[in-house]
Amino acid sequence: MDDRELLDRLGAFITPHKRALFDRLAPQRTRHVTVVLEDLYQAHNASAVLRTCDLLGIQEVHAIEAHNRFTANKEIALGSDKWATVHRYAGPDGALACIGALRASGHRIVATTPHAEAWTPEDVPIDRPIAFCFGTELHGLSDTLLGSCDGTLRIPMHGFTESYNISVSAAIVLYTVMTRLRRSTVAWQPDEATITALKLQWTRAALHDATAIEQRLRTGAP
Image 1: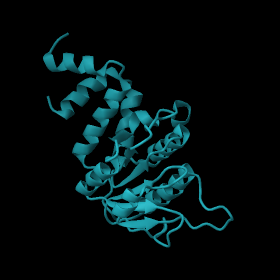
Image 2: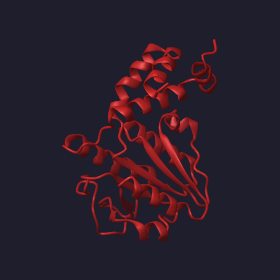
Image 3: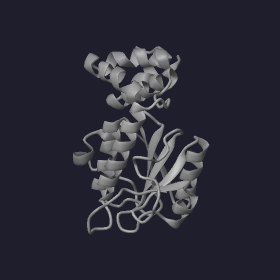
């Protein structure tokens, strides 16, 4: 049973409204833009970034957990953690593992820092897949991640304080870049196979007993 057939059969267990929602949203998701969150320790920030990614159609988030586990606050995430794809990289070598995975998928890795005279959200190149890296609330990005990035990005500021809150920074950067991307000729949308796989992932997430149902469908059990 391939993904298409499995999706059709599992889809019978969710509402027509949800199936229509998946059909509408899946083609609008993208992996062209992704987010790296390094060692966030405040769940409300992690949750707010996840929610922003979901609303903007950004499917994947990469969480580096060298010291702090990436957790979502349900009241803030509002279910976005259910629909996003979160890749986790634990331990002291998590940053290197994350960088390796992003390079393998062809992403340009960009560090966000308030102190760099670098790209802004309005002019950062979007011609190839891009990963925006956000660091801890107190110390920012680690030296390992900063030293491995292909470039840096800053958000222009005109006030006395040095930086935006991390969730606000992510929202500004991602909204600006996704708006530019949707107006561009860059091929940012998923192919049909990816759309099918994504709808299958969401259908499984929508079912409380997806594993058991899928097993029965695969074995032909009633």
